[in-house]
Image (cartoon, rainbow, N blue to C red; front, side, top):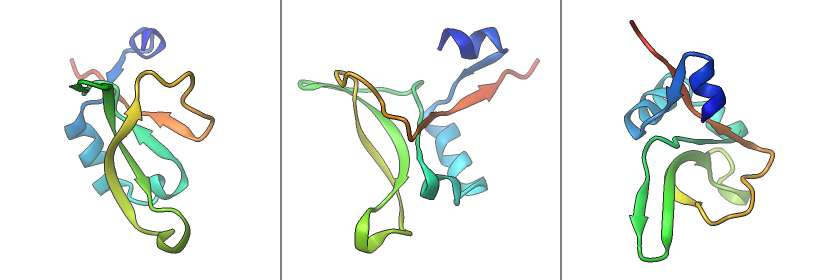
Length: 88
């Protein structure tokens, strides 16, 4: 997040994630895209919204989920974090 801010960006919110999915639907078929600016807090921890695709037999089907638990040790190499450019 600090790197995003240093580049004049801020973390994407769920509404930015949804617009990104509309504008670039093919991207979530390649990798998970996470919006760190929106968090769902519940008794088991915190989840972040993400765009990705169904695996195996539903390979090319897109979806929106809240499956990224903040207590995970790492995000994995196939995850992108949505950043949005600040407008003056």
